[in-house]
Length: 432
Image (cartoon, rainbow, N blue to C red):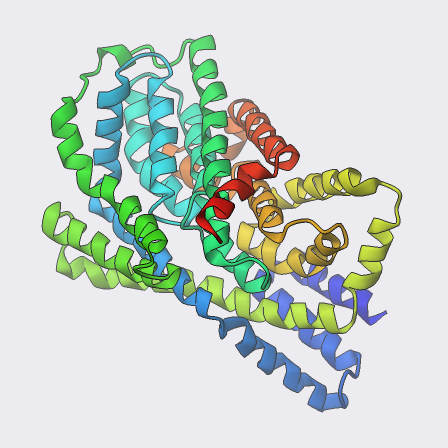
């Protein structure tokens, strides 16, 4: 009865518009008290203990730093220079600007681990350029919202950091390595329908008329941005610093590029940049901490055990259960952000993964792929909301354009499900 009450209270609070972190924490605390796990009121001591335990984890130190990296590179002008360099390489023509938008979003994924931040950085540069080339705003918003979803797969990734904190068997370096090839595969999968839609509907009619930036000048201007992922990922692989230390190095490098090299960030703007990053980080970390209470209640009340037994004994088989989980997460991803999905459902999903002996790193990549799909699947898609706001269109106007992108992205997911080595090969080679 208490187990059902935990989820009923959580669902009712969510429907009432209560912030998800508060709903998680209150539902968990109420379940702890009513279950009389310890001795009446003293049982509530578990709530503040698990609130602290949810935060007292070393990998979480990287989270606010990578959020800050996204804010810094958003204002440094790196995105504009990367776009110019990409256009100089691929040239002008129907479907080339969407290709550039996806490529730049993938590259920025190697700098910042936030999908909405990526959508804002790329959208601020590309949506106006695509409008001048003759692309409809709804199409541009769809492409950029989908492209930014690769950001949580290509390391560094905030989603992988949260997953590693909740799943001890999956380290941050292993998840970062595992997400690289699926992230690139997902990006390539988006290019095909994006270019096909542009050419089939005759979009970008004025693109060939726009000037093509000079190659060598564009390369020189973009070189500082191009070096950022090399520094972050190469430094981690070389053993110069841990993922947490890499986040601090990335912040220092971004400030150097923005304030000294490009001079697009001024000293008086730093307090606002720090404040915005701190606010976003505080929201994420507060949800993580409150979710620790919820996870404690789920584990202590043994809620996951009967669910796991019911699913494994349902007769669906391993592949049937995995298909069911993917369909369920696709629906959930339309309404919740990735961090919230992880915090709510991982305590319930990991016992299922263990029952079928799935590799937890591979399973984390599958979950993150589903979260990425949800970031640009209407009606409540966080990346799409950002790109639509920049483009000045309603999210429902993007449906006709975004559905082929969702289908193509799902095909990349199917490949990773069928061929786990797409995720596990690189961690094995690197020895993680």
